[in-house]
Image (cartoon, rainbow, N blue to C red; front, side, top):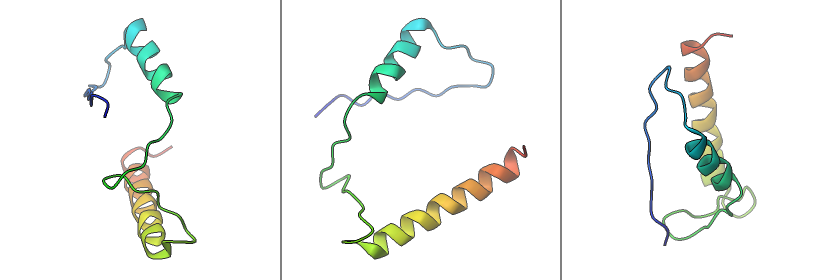
Length: 69
């Protein structure tokens, strides 16, 4: 199991080149599913998939109200 790393960015914070490289490298890592992070498949788990899509839609609505385009 990999080490969990978390960062909190404040508005106006500039990332260092090392931090940008770390984020870019993380983008190329594969997603690893396990009992704490199961794959949610719309065919085999339609209820979980529907709940996830509802949560995503709710989050997107909340974000659009906070940051109007």
